[in-house]
Structures are given as C-alpha cells and as structure tokens.
Amino acid sequence: MKRLLAQQLVCLLLVVLAFGGCSFGGSATVTPTPDETTATVTAGPTETTAPGDPTATESPAATESETPADEATTTPPPVNTETPTDAPTATDEPPTATATATGTATTEPTPTPTSTVTPVTPTATASATATAVPGPTFELGGQVFSFLYLDLMRESGMTWMKMQIRHTPGGSTADAENLVAIGERHGLKVLLSVVGDQAALAANPTQYFQEFAAFLAAVARVGPDAIEVWNEPNIDREWPAGLINGTNYAQMLSYAYPAIKQANPNVMVISGAPAPTGFFGGQCRVNGCDDLIFIQQMAAAGADQYFDCTGIHYNEGILPPTASTGDPRGNSNHYTRYYPTMVNTYVSVFPDKPLCFTELGYLSPEGLPPLPPGFEWASGTSVQEQAEWLAQAAQLSRDNRTVRLMIVWNMDATIYGSDPMAGWAIIRNNTCLACVTLSVVMGQG
Image (spheres, one colour):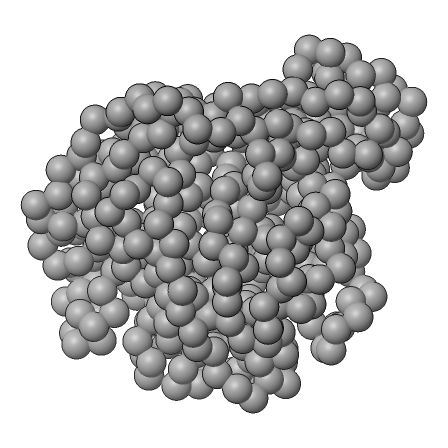
C-alpha cells in the first residue's frame, strides 16, 4: 500500500482541477477480516425495485433471498425486479435481523479467512483535488452483508458500517448489541437502520409508534452512533398501504426522536430515506407516494424538529455524479436520475438539515451474467466507472458541505438473480477498484 500511495501522490501532483487522468500501477493484497457471528436471528423483509418513472403505470413485486457468509441463520428479504419505467426506486437492505425476546448476542469467532481482496488500481483517479483535507463533518461508510472486509473499509477511508435490524413486539436488543460490539472492535461507527412490524403498525398506529419508540430507546442505550428510523416509508413494501404519507411518518418521528435522545443524546437520528421515485405521478396514492411530496408533507408536519440528518437514497445513476442532464432513459429531466438534482431537491425541502445518504451506489454487471429484466438500464456501466463515480460522489459530498454521511451501497452482496444486488457490490472477484478511488478522496491512498 505504501508503494501505491507514493504512485498516487506523484500522479495527483500532475493533474490539475479535473476528474480522472492518473494510472496507478500495482495492487495491494488485503486479508479479509475474520468472519463474525451475530445473534441468532430471523430475517425480515426488505425490498428493492428498479428506478422509477413519473409516467409509470405498473406496481412493483418479486422476491429473492441470500444467506450472508457471516450470519448462518439469517435469510435476506424479498426484493423487487421491476422495469426502470414501472416502479419506485426502492432499494435493498442487507439481511434484516429480527430482534427476538430470546435472542442473545454471541461472541466473535475467529475462523480462518477464506478469501483475499485486492484493491486493484483503476486507470483514472476520481478527482484532481483528491488530496484536499476532508470537511470537518463529512464521513464515509459502507453497507455490509458480512463482516469479512471491515478492515479494508477502514483502509478505504470509511469510518461507518451500516446494517438493518427489525423490531417485533416483545423483541430484544441482542442484535443491536452484537453489531455495536463488532463495530467497536474494528474501529467503525455503527449506523443501525431500524424497521418494524407493518401489521402491528396498521392495526393501531399510535400504539405502535409508542412501542417502536420504546424499542428505539433501548437500542440507543446500546450505543450505536446513528439510528435511521425506518426505511423507505413512502412505499407499501415498507409501510402499510392506505396509511402512506409524510404526515403519518412525521408522527412516528415525533415519538421516536425524544425517546432516542432521552436514552442517549449522542445518537444521530436520521429520517428514514424514502424510495426515490416518480411512479405515483407526483402524488400520494393508496400504495405509496413520490418521495418529493412525501418529504414535503413531512416538512409541513414539522418533522424537522425530530431528526438530525435527512435520509436520502440514490442508486439509479448511469452517468457521473457531476451530470445533471443527458440521461438517455425516459423522463430524463426527472430529479431522481442525477446526483446533483437529488441533493438540491432534498436540501430545498429541509434547508437547515444536513443530508445522510444511507444508500448511494452504481449498478454494474461487469464480470457477472447479463442483468435481469428491469435492470437493463445499467448494462453499459463498467466497474471502472462504478469506482470513479463513487469517488466523485464522495468528493462532491465532502466538498459541498451539505452532506454529513455517505453510505456506499454496497460492499459485498452476492445475490445476482432477479435482483442483481451483487452488481452494486464494490468487492467482487476478490478485487475492489472503488476501495482505491475512495481511499484517494478520503486521504487514505
């Protein structure tokens, strides 16, 4: 890594105010972090769909599952496989750990590592200004499906790991305890995305808001660094149909935020990132809301009193994050197509809050089978572009002073069926191009 660092620094000195332009020779071999086991859990549902289109007329559906290397008893959730013009841009989560009353955190085993990841050097840097000192508040992290690569994440400039847990009535905080302990052992801050029981929410919303807030308070006492309150609450795969609107979600936040802060004032509270979409024609309907009207309803209900950072997702890009026009797909002017317009849209609604990208990624099928139906829009994106664009997004996020946190979607998923989650993974075939580009931007290269 030292030789690679020297090569990077020499190259960066030759590049002036432009993205790209360097070619680094060589690569470093990284031994994965020994596998770790979480509490015994049962996976809950999480979803994904292809990017939305404001003129879409069909509704999303489909399922698939994955068992991560580190959680022998966890099965991932259903995911969606809609065409890019049919559905909201709902995004995947790692396996959802369902907290159970009898769950207990387990100790960390130390099995023999089974793979080696090589951060292969890309042919261009993400930016000519990559050596600039990172902003005082911006931080980078990754969403994980295993704990094999936590040390590599740190070497790439990441300081956060994200996973999701699920509350069920009467559930314990064992899974949260285990994840926080793992993060501490590896020097990573922990973001827990906490979701819950849709049926209980639908049956009695006010009562469930109180129960969920009590669970979040218990999780906060465990000591995570941040909690995301729910995930994509603007679509019916995550929130009960007929109850979906920003006003109802703001009510949940009004219970959750004071409960979390009373339990642990150091926990950063992130609003649940909506699924970016134009599927609902700019409106709220029985089965969901476009994300813009959803966050506007949140703002009108006073939700900004009840979170510290605005949750945001961006996973449908097929152009560099510097682009704000030129998307070749339909509805090319829709704000969800581009990184800058997503940022501007969310900042316009909550101007006094920083943004937290709890998922940001680029889909690439390179080295994998052809993309399944509904995801063909990313067929032309290379792993090289994925690495460069992620680094550019990290630099833009760092430099614009409005983004507090960027979680890369994702580190190491292996599902590649009707939902091509592995196509978003930056670690594949034992290499990690993005690890190099991100490390340069974050001053670690």
